[in-house]
Amino acid sequence: MLDLPFDPLKRAKEVEGLVMEGLARKYYRFRPAKYYGGIATADIVGCPFLCAYCWNYKRNLHPEMSRDKYYSSDEVANRLLNIIKRKGLNKVRLSGAEPILGEKSFEHLCQVLKNIYKSNPMLDFILETNGLLLGYEQEFVQRLSHFSNLQVRISLKGFDNESFENISGAERNLFHLPMKGLQNLIGNGMNAWPAIMYETFGPEGIGKINQKLKEYEIRPEELEIEYLEPYPFVLENLKKHSISLHT
Ligand code: SF4
Image 1 (cartoon, helix red, strand yellow):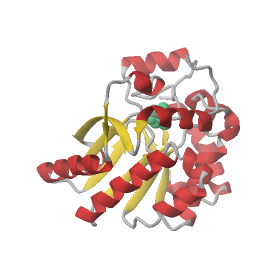
Image 2: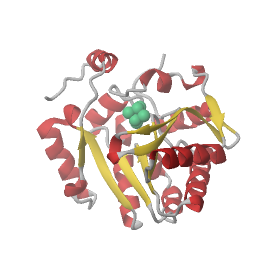
Image 3: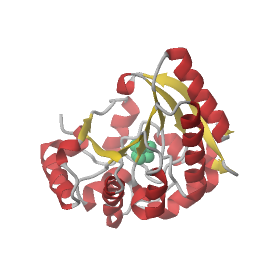
Image 4: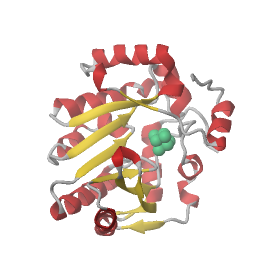
């Protein structure tokens, strides 16, 4: 069991130790997905958060128990490029967990990006992240800014300290790090934007997050609203965390 709330920076290190073997990372699936108008997707294992609405909750709670395989950056890029070719797509992403947990996973990500762009510099790579480490390690942002077609989508978990902790399970005093990550990316000239889950924010939460974005000099118009996939286990989990949903 994981006691809530937890220190997500400490957890990021621990999880990285469980999902990285050298510079190879655990993945559990490679697939074409319908999102963004069609995108080649590699599903990774391991996240420093444990969001109440995560559709990959069990795997992220116990990354050590998953029997998924480790893949080198070459293997990951080749699999994604094969999907692109077979399905006639032009977008790529990593999903299912958090791509950046620390130095090793970051290096793995950079190698995947290099391999993908070496083969096709025009592909859109959408980096889906919770932004925690991008707010903590300025150097990661600088290194990412060298990839010109990279787009970064930061999924914000709350509109204030309390809602951040309730949703992510992470200690509330770190609410600012994903916002800072977003600010760092935009400040480095990158194409980056925030996303939120409508049902956990509601109109009041959206008003509050818009205000926060302004404080960080991020344009609220960039906010992407996503909607909950109401899987039965997700609804049950939200209930267990006493999180009520806006409809
Ligand atoms: S940040 Fe994303 S992958 Fe991580 S627990 Fe939350 S929803 Fe799941």
